[in-house]
Length: 92
Image (tube, rainbow, N blue to C red):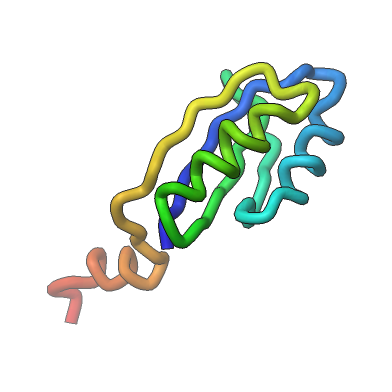
């Protein structure tokens, strides 16, 4: 599974509609409205790299109200369980 984190700038007055439209795209697992320099963060999960082109520039970036996006592809995932294990080393 390939995970991409997409940071999105959207038209301010359309953030809720843009977020809902993005969430309806196949391959988008979650969309968050956030504070800071961007408006939305979408998590895209696909089986092959080629599918990212269909989901992000092919569909997500074409939604009315999306001004720009910046995509980061994840190399590794560290679950909360993994982090707890790392911090508890030598605690026994």
